[in-house]
Image (tube, rainbow over all chains, first blue to last red; front, side, top):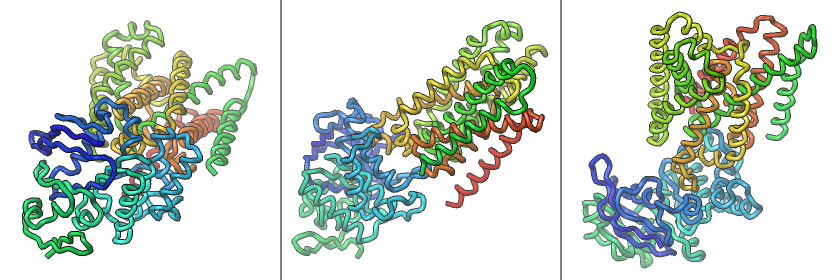
Length: 252
Length: 313
């Protein structure tokens, strides 16, 4: 369970997050949606301790993020950021292997290597395994990064716009992989998504943010109504139902 | 593949060392060999400390074209030296023992590095800003040293001037023992941290996500870099591009940045270039004083090539 209490963040006097209180249970997919600058990425990086907390508390499975050793947290929580920039020559396999670092500390066991091969195959980068990251396209690199994050094998995955650069095939595949992980292994994914229909189809819970506040929180059926959507994004859009899931016609 | 290339580098390094020790031997063998062995120890230690400090610095800044000297670390060291001479006077400076002198210079340098460079690493400036800051810091401290030089009397000036240019002939033997201890300890620490360094190279956020205590690790690595730069600068003076040349060559030859391979490879390449080059210049060409120039020339070209290749990708 992830517990977020009274979380606020300001950057140079400008408030970015205001009084966020959330409880995220274990198991399932939680989608964070909202317009640009709503504070979604900031919230994710505070949960993942990438930034120091200013006020409030974040607790992962009874472990406060500020005082728990980094290695302990890295075995429970993995984060994929939007802008992974890597210096130096690193092959895809080397990158994905680093996902096992919290467990192996660099001395990888046969199980670690098996997990790496599994992740490489799962995200379709096995045939790119010996290529250097700098020679890959944006989408291929994104898949390598996703594979590394999965490979960390944590109960919680925080993904910041993981569908960036992915084509439809791979975007769908990633969402299905997350769904399977949530259903079969009771793991939890918290994803920042811009494609609201991906959230509608795969998420168990949608948390909508605007101006640093949580403005809606509930199942896709609850949140994805014309009124709530207008409150979040600032314009009205049609919502229909297909196969029992809401479909938002946001582009019309 | 990596193993075979590492072995090849090791063989070349051994050949360089043998050449340095045996080329043009004349006169009392025991005496000459003893002198050469001391000099060899100093050269190897400079090579290893420059190679390790550069690789560590590139790793912690997640940047392949930075070196400690581009960021002005050796300028900091030389400023500390000039400051000591200025405060104690030429005689006073000459009177304190080599070990204490070195310790004082290193302390001044670490204090300056902690104040000036740590904020840069934690704030994550973009690369052009980082380079600019480094060049400015280097310029500032070189100018401050120049100012101190002007205020010194000529005798004291002669004392610092001798230390301000890279010179692979006038090695300071008194510091070789201290330097060896520092370099050996740093090398052992690097080897111990080799897997963690691979993660650190991913950059701050990815490293934290994988469980690295970033601020502590970055501070520790910066401290080690400062110590290594102090050791090599104290022994031979500042070398601007040698580290860059060595790190780039090692990465090219091995085709990886995994530290378990890269660290020993960079150290071996540095030994080959420095000891082998010195052997050729000193014993075959008889014009030893130019090795520094040649190495800086090659290193400068490597720097430009990296900038050129980097800008294309």
